[in-house]
Length: 301
Image (cartoon, rainbow, N blue to C red; front, side, top):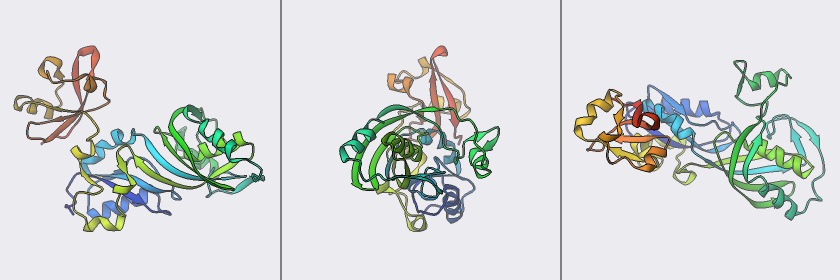
């Protein structure tokens, strides 16, 4: 395994019972890294893909966190909890045994597309500078505005009442426990998230993930990526040697300096900017009003 000075993105299969912060800290300690951060929280009860960024790769976090997520979820019908998941206290119970499979499938698939979600009180979102869960633990309810998220795909996998298993591909910011709660409301019996596994973040899948305890014994490869490789889904622009110094100093590039700039790059949220020998120099973005590429993240020498 590379030394703690290496800049890496690691696809961790987070185990149940650890917070995302605890998992990240454990990886940082194992690699003796200076810095570490993750790209999207998984609750302690959840398992699956957690991307941990090491050293300079922490600067990639905002790009990786914007990727779509895929989950396999199990919800329990007939029970509503105060946290919308199995970690909370049951506050309402009903009998879901009469509900037909066709109705469950119809309701689940009706959530496909753009939907509005009200963030749960037990979440890390902040209100007046404090996380919502701190208000919730004191029994306080605060106003939360609904947010638009996108359910790209949702499909029923299995029913063994009161448990229902489904798979969902969704945009960032989607709360799967709120999705379960809302499905239960629409079915008229209530529900909560019983079990959750994140199976992918963008191109990073559970099949390629590694256990935390495996990290020290693994070479780069499965589940462990250099920065440029971790951004392989982002369009790449190679600049000539005469522009390398300017890019490393954060100087914007005029459109006439980069004739290889494509329409895909102009529309993308990020552009990998590399030297002719394949070194990742910066991440830029096209600024249409001034017809130039701005340097948003510069990696220097």
